[in-house]
Length: 177
Ligand SMILES: CC(C)(COP(=O)(O)OP(=O)(O)OC[C@H]1O[C@@H](n2cnc3c(N)ncnc32)[C@H](O)[C@@H]1OP(=O)(O)O)[C@@H](O)C(=O)NCCC(=O)NCCS
View 1 (cartoon, rainbow, N blue to C red):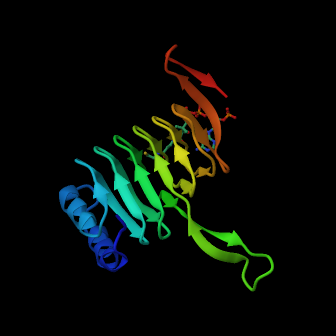
View 2 (view 1 turned 135 degrees about the vertical axis):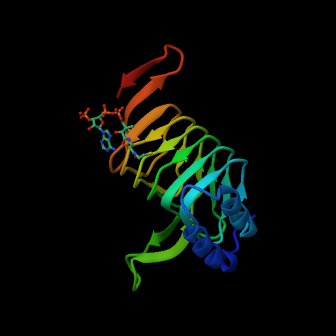
């Protein structure tokens, strides 16, 4: 189910006018009215959602202040359960064909789905680009630009984001990359 951009216009303004740390139930209802599918206990501080994409957020996920979700038509942003998405994070499915022979380098626009697993922590100011899948319990360091898939239990950081360490879930130890 796609978001309704006409409803989003008003709902973005309403959500951002509400106090960051309260009224999570009302924010959920407003975004659901615009077509978002939000699980139980999704806590949103303040975000802006733009575009007619399919938005799904799992139970108990937290989304910080000034986070920006932008999606092209026919694309999808799926965020798992128990995630912590910090403030000023941008998640953008849309991009353009590279168009060196045309008037504009930004050729035809299109979207690539983004899937974020369960228990993921995304650090402040990060950017997640279209086509990326972030594995379960991954960590995205502050200010990262994620251009490629991130495996489960990995910590990535930087621009472009690279693996800095990985948690071995069998030995219960961190391994440096
Ligand atoms: C990714 C993060 C969790 C890693 O923490 P950590 O395991 O303690 O990692 P370290 O501090 O030991 O850093 C390991 C290496 O990664 C680098 N690094 C850590 N975070 C980085 C980042 N965000 N961007 C680029 N490099 C980073 C360090 O400089 C260090 O490099 P070195 O080995 O060359 O010295 C942490 O740095 C981070 O970004 N936290 C997010 C903070 C945030 O967003 N807070 C908002 C509230 S939710």
